[in-house]
Length: 303
Length: 226
Picture 1 (cartoon, rainbow over the protein chains, first blue to last red):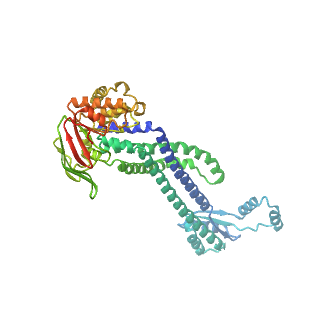
Picture 2 (picture 1 turned 120 degrees about the vertical axis):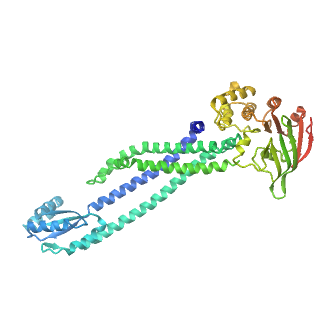
Picture 3 (picture 1 turned 180 degrees about the vertical axis):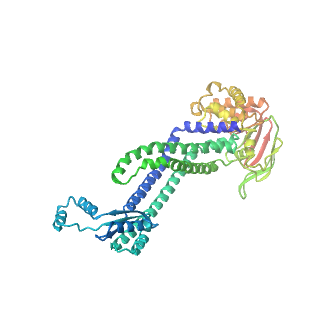
């Protein structure tokens, strides 16, 4: 048994090393298939981060009366904070609102001049409510509308509800389309891997016939090729790891610029999920390779 | 001993490749099986190595009735019958030594025995100095000798040679036939399938002629009559 295993490994390694070009061609095709899968995975991760970034920016502003006392504001803030759908509540005083307004319009001298002309602070203090989950924002708006407080100046959230609905709609569609594209890519990559292994076995059809003729048992015919298929899968995943991390390294600075104010690290994502991402890829490619080898050999190994 | 009793083979209904073949070949005999292309010689070879099954009749090799041999048993049959072919059927990515050793490796023989047996058969066929060459690096005659060496490693009681000289020039062909005679002298039954008239007439051994799937002549020390 042990001797047979050693020989099967020996035949497999001999086959790989003596058919270098076939090995290179097969592994290259597998690497290309994996490259497309990993590229798509990167795009998917980035789109999900982009959606999260947009969602994080979504908040509900509750404008308060200018004469509201600090105690009233604190009491209202506490009441809202205790709501289950609320992640955070921030208070913006009149002075803070004015400062922020000036900063935002620093390049717009006409607006600033108009503000000076007015001679007073026209802005209202507000409570900025960040929802736990953007999907629950419409319900949260309804709950906020029910609050009984004299210091609330404006409760009209019609625009927010519309925008939230649109964002939810867009993110749902992006997820659906993303899933569809991933499925197509996965299917195509699996088909490519399946065919490349079948071609590799096709070139060995004469050898398989000879093995049969000299009295090789099924295990001696099948297992070296099956082992070679697993080695192809291993080599292709190793190569994709070697190729893909430098690519992510090049991509990262661009992402940091693009997702300004939002912490994103694609390299960390691939490092933190290394085992799941590449382990799963190795497993799937191995299964496809072994299956295609098995089917192809079966065809040529008939007595 | 090889015994064929009323053997028929048909691939299609009413299209019989072999019809009512009755043959008895003694252990240690040298038999030439002759016939034109399409006469049924190759079908008979395929039946003897378990590649094809008979439509009717019985096939017995030694004390083994292989008429209804299962796919699982075929490898064991092939380890008992040495076979050589016109196109040598050597593994191109293995050296001559590895090709010969492979037939023993797949049976799980220990390395020490493999080294001993392979050395001995390589010496017998005169290839000990070319053992590390790949098939494409040697002549056709040498490839056929390697194929014979491979067929001999199991020390088979029967050696089946299907047109072994078909791809060789006359000098190499004669060398191969001489080698087959030497192997036969060791006690191995040799069945030489050929349509080479010169070789058959030179051998002066038993000749079985097949035509249109039937045995048309069976002569001790016969000649190529077709």
